[in-house]
Image (cartoon, rainbow, N blue to C red; front, side):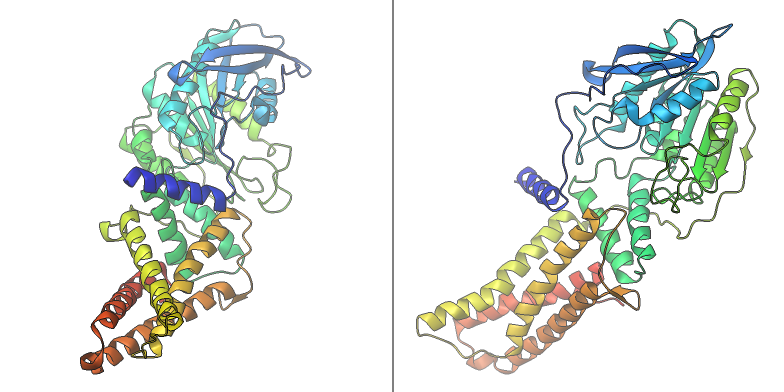
Length: 477
């Protein structure tokens, strides 16, 4: 039964989010062989990833090298079946700085919006490392990993498992849980739209926790800092000052703290003020990604790799991080009383009680056996309670589906008008619930037995509704 409910929730979320799950048949095939850019060579490779899955990639390398060169495997961000061409700009520029660079088609098998494993992706990355180490002209002792966004969780995990990885580079990486990063991403977008208050501090936070509880947010509480504490290789962290997906100010200190906890001080942190999440030039403050890398970024990668593989690792070389517009907040799993099972039970109670009250009255009227209501407030409780509960669900789903470009509607004093309407309905339901309970108590002696059951269920739902609405921010300023 629990599994069936979870599947139902996943299907509902998929419909409302217009999610398109990645194909489960295997990795994307890409657009065919990648022609060698001027001054470089291009060679297709295949290797084995997690579960025996064959993955395909391309190695770009300098055309003329006097000796074996260092190598780097690029691990892309989120999404199933991302083709290798997605990182072709990075691969080309890094290869022009003297590195052999492997880009590969990301798996789609076992990867979807609701199911992914960083551990499995780390196995894929290590398979790519092995393939690059075996290439002619590559120094096998100088091959490392580069990870973008989600790859910034995967690359350190892979490095923590294998001494074959010589170094780690993360771009737009996180030393926080995916839950904290994603909520910051979504709430920052709302703040940029002028939203503040309970929708962000209660509604969005608690909805994200509910999704994680129900298994709809894969790897939500991945222990990034625990992994970093096990990384022994030199690490380069790169962040764009206009990163709208990853907190560029909060993360570097978390990286330093985790690495130092494991005794690793061989790290470098650098920041590109006008760059976006992927360290690309952005024409509009991080909303749109330009084609070009941030000036100096590729040079930094090339020189840093040469230094660390040449026996000159950095020592706690960290510049001052950029200021981010909004702070992130750590988010823990839901307490038992707010778990998805309890939320589902509360919602079921609301649907049964709030719809049952007027439906019973309608049936009685059609049968000519209408009963005078104990209080007119009961109708308001049923109508306002049901509308606010269902409205909350659909409104937050709508905002989540909008991703980084939400349109919350007209905003008044930091509150979107749809949210203010839901709050007004919640206040009305709470007041009507109190008035109904008082009226029932005064008329208890004259209420028929059958009507007591209907009223009892309605008042119970009203009593549960109040703390539920507080938790979700409907009764909070």
